[in-house]
Image (tube, rainbow, N blue to C red; front, side, top):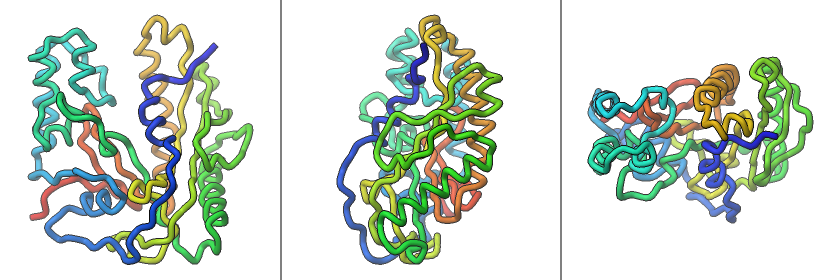
Length: 294
């Protein structure tokens, strides 16, 4: 028997909250030249409390934490997971070391993940915003169907055999697919798509400022799109993190990169802080860092 990899649960819970969308301002989100492009896109999509830093500051903080972890005897195999105060404590580290791994300033929390005294916010999760041009659909359900069909087509073009295609407009458990990688890893593969009701608003100014069908955290109807594998009881029971991380990385390398490169121009992706990477925003195949403009 297999169960879903528990490390993904927190993000899925956030994505699964069913709330009524709220209307957005009926004009494009204006670009502020004193802020980075990443800040512009993230704020427009509703990811608040993001911070622009001087160039090189994020990398300095990440390197400082890496050295602190090594000095504390924590393996760098945690790459890909944010190291928070709670995680550090769960590793059996003292409170003083845990505090050093997750500091409390706004900049530190943004780059390094949740700190000691703050609850997680939307910026601590990966997020998507869709700004489908308004003339692509005449009704909200037509817009939802258009997006769903576009996403499933991307997966099929990647060689994924979708065993049960249905419109997961609401939060669900995901559906199975077949692919040679799943057989190679001896793991079960799933995909999940959530496309709630859109609102009519406008894309951010830097995206074009056009009228659009919008799904975003700002309108409380953020889309959700995920491809993942399922960990076996044996891996969970023995805490076989090597296999779990290996499988996760193989899935990411095989699917995530292709998905990102195939995203339509109207997709904006916010990537949360990870162990070895500061947050960033990806738009039209370009990654933007939160760096103070010169």
